[in-house]
Image (cartoon, rainbow, N blue to C red; front, side, top):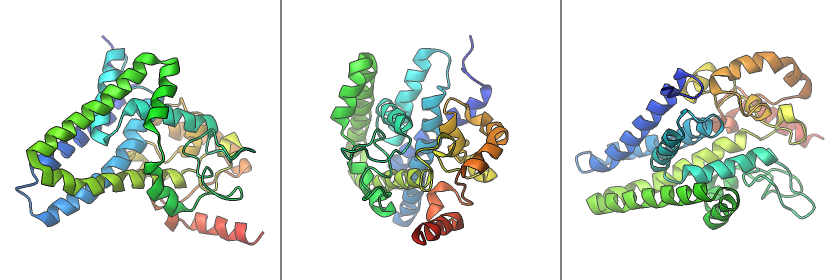
Length: 291
C-alpha cells in the first residue's frame, strides 16, 4: 500500500509534527520538575514552534495532503489540531479563502475576500499597521461562521473540524486537572505563538502586489530558513502555483525568476517573521513615502 501521496520526503514534516506534539506534552508533564526560568525559555520556544508548525507543516498539508489513504489525512489533521491548538480543518477553510483573495484590497463595501488580508483593517487602501495586525488577528476569527461556511459544502468536514476543536479542548481540560499551574503558565505563550504566525503572514504580503498574480506573495530565498520551514520562504512562488509541492518550489523559482523580476516581485533578505528588519522593506517604505 502506498502511504505518501507525493513523495517520501513528506516523512520529514510528519515526524516534525509528532515531535512538536511530544514537546507540547513535555511542557505540561515536566513543569513541576523544571525551574521556572527554564519553563519560560521553553515557553518562548513553544511560541515559535506554533508559528513554525502553522506556516510550514500545517500549511503544506493543506495544499498537498501528505498521505494517500484518506483516513490517514484525517488522522494527521487531528494530530495537528492538538499540536497547534485549534482545528486544522477550520484553518484549511480560512487559508483557502486567503488564496481566493491573495491579500486583496477592500472593495467598494470595504470587504475583502481574504479574511487574513493585511488590507482588511487598514485605512485608505493601505495595509494595517503591523503590530495591530500581529496582536489583534487572533481575536478576529468567528468559529461559528467558519463552521457554517464549511458545512454548506462539506458537512462531514464541518463535523470533523468541530470534533478536532472539542478533542483539543478536552485534552486541555485533562491537562488542567493534571497541572493547572502549568496550563495557565503556557497560555500567554500560546497566544504569543499565534501572534508570531500573524507577524509571519504580514510580511509574506507586505509590498506584494494584490493585482499581479506572480507578485501576490513576498519571498525569502534563504536556504536555512527554507530548510527549517519546509519551503515557506518561497511564498511568491507558492501563491503563483499553490499546488506545487514544497520540495519543488526552488525549481519553480528558477523557472519563473525572470518573470518575477519583470513583475517586481518583492523579495526580502530575512525570514518573514523578521520582515521588520529587512532592508528591502525599509527601502520600499521610503520609496512609497517619497511619492
